[in-house]
Image 1 (tube, rainbow, N blue to C red):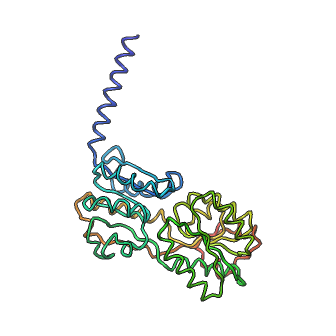
Image 2: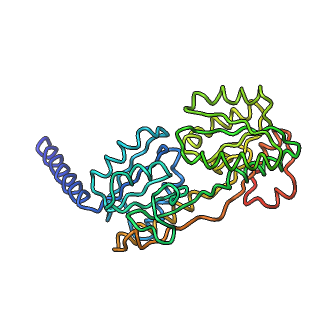
Image 3: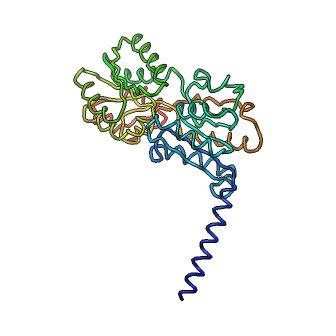
Length: 324
């Protein structure tokens, strides 16, 4: 029995070594994301499913290496360097800051942006139609997003006079978003109260200050850290009874009031087609960047009721999804 056990163990070890060696010989697809594996699960799942539809399966004909910054953007340079050192066939990165992190380290490894804000303005590509380098993929945000979110808040609260906006000081995307929010606030006659946030630990005090200062609605722009902290943000909005408008629908799924933004899962799924074309020999420079232009409005009627709000019929009719 002992001899059989030893032989079985040895056979298993040999099989594992062969399988490991075979997997290591597969093309490496590197994935870098600023969020956590948990918070980005729906998007990564859509990406993997999109690749599987095109015939690419981890461990069968590709090997996927993941790195997640867990919302700590300071970790991105080291994580990007780890992935670049693997010399992958393709790097899939998202959102803006991971895209910048990997683009700084290589001009030869193809980079597919699973999502990105203003890749032209931030120097990632030359133009949407002609990227011109090793970066291509999906562009999703427009500078008008924050303004649209404030307009939605005004529809929900017709007499809105003071609105707050959360700003992640480490997210460069929030600079143009803030400018647009200020311009829209001026046009609507709404006072905008800016709150700079550096970590989740500051959120409770921030919402308490919003409440104390008479803020009647809060804008939560698209942000990886805010997405990871969506449960906490939703609970604080409920505790302070301040309606909030979010950039990601996942906030509303968690119990938030309303969101206006792109469907990130669909965008990530589309990114898989870029990986397919690159693995088949097309250069990133020859693949136009696709810009997502459809924005979705999602409303949680249960949350509206809890806040004592009546959703206008016009807003209800425009909603892509209503949670009841």
